[in-house]
Length: 177
Image (spheres, rainbow, N blue to C red):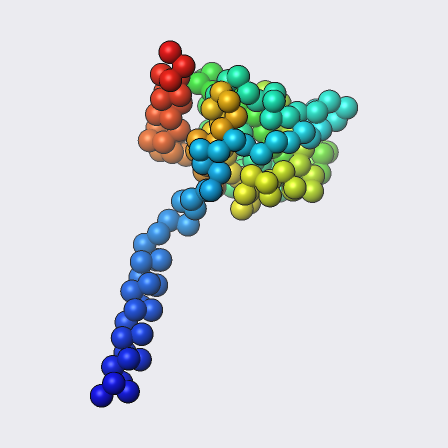
């Protein structure tokens, strides 16, 4: 009898584990960096490669760091909403151009608009690795001290903004008072 019971129990456990996994949202990957300082970086700026953008430049204000690339179709879908966020003035919006060709990135911004206060170029993806980027687009909300308080894998949507990002920004502002 045990000869059949143990394999059947093992199979049942495997089915349970798989069923639980199927209920999870793959865009909700927990980040070990939440609540920790963002990785230090210093990268050339897209519009003026002779100047750098660093984490120090982002400190002092609540910042949305958006990882994007011209080759990324989801970034194209997300871009109008990122532009809305930037135009609202609710948060400082910076870009991290990920594994892209400079000319293609500039052409993309010329066609779609440039909502970013500044854009760092991560040509080889090393800074993205430090941030734990899975792919583009991804966005990180940083507090005034450069601590990561939110990470979104995939395009930020109006729902994400309303339910997650905007309330966090308000909490951060309330802490300042």
